[in-house]
Length: 373
Image 1 (cartoon, rainbow, N blue to C red):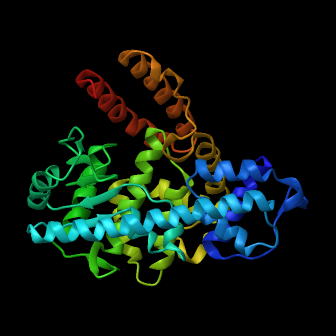
Image 2 (image 1 turned 90 degrees about the vertical axis):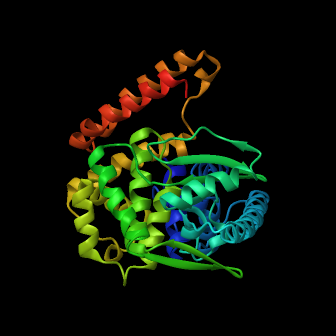
């Protein structure tokens, strides 16, 4: 691994776990062997500038002053953006409740509360998770507030829109679309939330925001980033979210239920491999990672996962998008070629599941092309 990547990972470890030892890279002093500009750019690519700055705070070595001040300025803007998003969420949820619409929040700002500094986590979209009846009511209500509305995906019950400057996504389902088996298992977990009352809450100022119960949320976060892994764009931030969620609720997590659900999803192998990545590369405490194994085969898979994440960046940030200027069907052909390339790479890590998921991924891609999506 080249120095900038090792430096980033060491600082992410320190930011996640307040690990304040003095860092070294390739046998040299950290400060002398790393191009800090490249580390900063890599942190931006992986949406981890806040976590990495927290790591720098815990280290004895610092970037050059000019870059450090720029870094601090970026994180201060991130703090302000998070505060504004939290306020937007509080106001919108109250409006929805006044209209007799009840929602949970998934991903994003709810997971941020598991960090030592929630406001330093890079924020994304506002993701609402709703029961069938509330999903239909929310669509009608929020469309009147939106400046733009995207195409709805019926199978996944997903509708995106922009309200003020924020992207709001409505989810009537959290299906991944990788396989029917997975989606049916996710539906059962969803039933545990809406019919079993498996929820927790976050006090967002004066507004109580409901989140999925942790035993369900762990599965939702995991299956979400597995979907991105297989469809081309997984970053460190998503795995950091998973680690912090597991760490925060390590004493209350139902381990047997987790194992049972992984078997139903058919994702035990992926969990163990990403668990090895979290421990080996992100410093996740072993005792907080369910099903962790130190066997060499999992470490080898973790190495390949790391190489893929560093190459593609968060949500495919580093992918070559130069072909976007070409006509629609040419772009789709490029995309299909990339999918085949990813299949070959993923098959070296998860051979059986790569073959199991690939037909559905290609089918969905061809269907989208036929619809002009």
